Length: 337
Ligand code: PIT
Image (cartoon, rainbow, N blue to C red):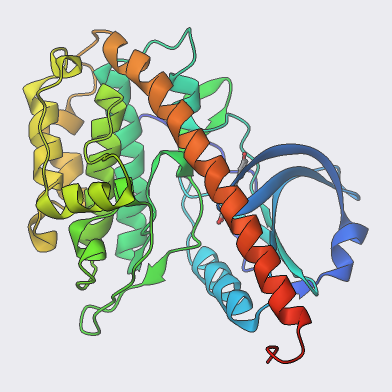
């Protein structure tokens, strides 16, 4: 079954080479803030010549190693041309910051929209979302790229009028994958990372599939399957693969959906279904079933979204403190490189 959701792309895919930071202000005018996250602030900007609107993500970036990370992100975005993956338009490297000019989407974060009062979440709609995520990730995996940070914050709605159409953002953790040279990295978001990330074992395509399983679980229940009292407990719940569907909010969720999630949350990376297998799974192939409203999930999702925002604001303060500490250190001639 093809995705029933087609979207227009704002511009056709471009190969972006970064330009000097001084050119940024000559080319774009900053309008309104669009949001913020781990990645820094995102602004609505306008091309001064054409009036075209874009999103601009700006990050403080002073070290050569941080610049390398952005070069990799640009290289990866240059190789990804898919309507469900946010496209890169332009990039500027300034003295102390990096700015990426990105495709503009205006619908905000998917989970924020679902937690809205009037939103009628059904399993049929969840199927539509998870299909789009699987199609996008299938394309990435086909190009031997792992996303490695699939989580609710990185799923945006295309526009307030098209809340059924989404795009995946943030390729800041994405990596090229070569089966014979094991990729071991320790990053990501505790609630959504796979056991092999926590255990520092080799990562693979299955690592993203685990995160899709967690996102599906949260989408259908509003509950976070591995959430503990603190980060340590969350990570040990992940490595124990300790997951159940006991909560009342699962009463309205189909067995088909639970089987789908269980297959993805397999402790063995290589045993998890890939995107093609997910798209063929009976839960994802019957979009027109399950029209019942998941009202318990929406109630829980409101709490989930509020808690995530709190965690993110704490992390933003921590990042700022680290940044300031780093700046102080750099000011000290005895420690600067
Ligand atoms: C938009 C609208 C919006 C946020 C974004 C884009 C953010 C995109 C983004 C892209 C990345 C990344 C982090 C954030 O690493 O509200 O059009 O590649």
